[in-house]
Length: 74
Image (cartoon, rainbow, N blue to C red):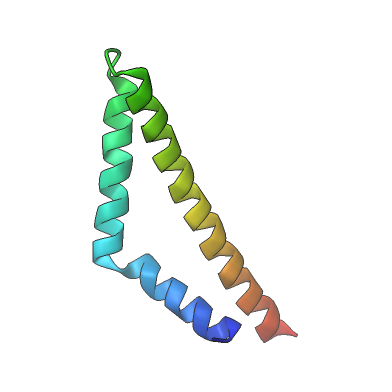
């Protein structure tokens, strides 16, 4: 798969309602955990790791789209 095709798939994923729903749910659950002063340390750590993983996905998506843009401009 070339960079353009990959970037097209990333753009489709960013618009995918199911993916958006799942990631939003993870973020909402993590936020509730962080806001609860009685959350167990392990649950806080899991929530932190989940948010960090979502950030890694977003960074990877951004990089894929940037690479495709560079290819178009060259």
